[in-house]
Length: 150
Ligand SMILES: [Zn+2]
Image (tube, rainbow, N blue to C red; front, side, top):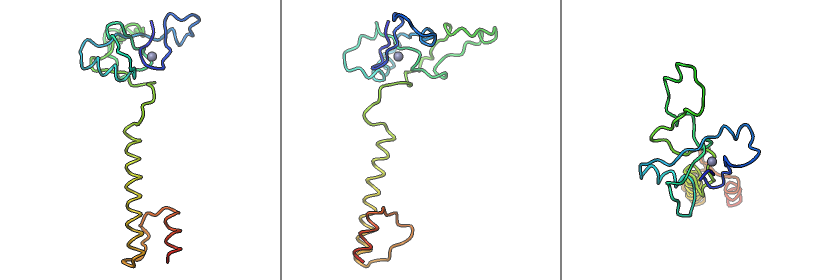
């Protein structure tokens, strides 16, 4: 079976799997509709997926996504096969790159804001409303323009 995450090539039917690949586990989609939809989103697949037949491989889960099995821990089992996912776990690692992440968006917003600040500061300085201050955050280009204008 193959992993449903777009771009992931985990496949337990593949021949000549490496030792690392042999350790990969495959998890069925959650029964909960909301949770299952979240998994679909994380898989980044545009096609209409039938959640009942889908599997997501263990590469996409963090250690925190797994339920602790105290019985096994006490007995010293380290068998990965016994690992179960928590009910609220969802794929979060090795996912396809999405268009914009929250942090990129944030960065873009900061840049835009910065530009606006530059502009108003420049206008004030040019209009003689005030002197340039050291704490004015101006990029090189803007500073050069002011120098020229003054
Ligand atoms: Zn995968």
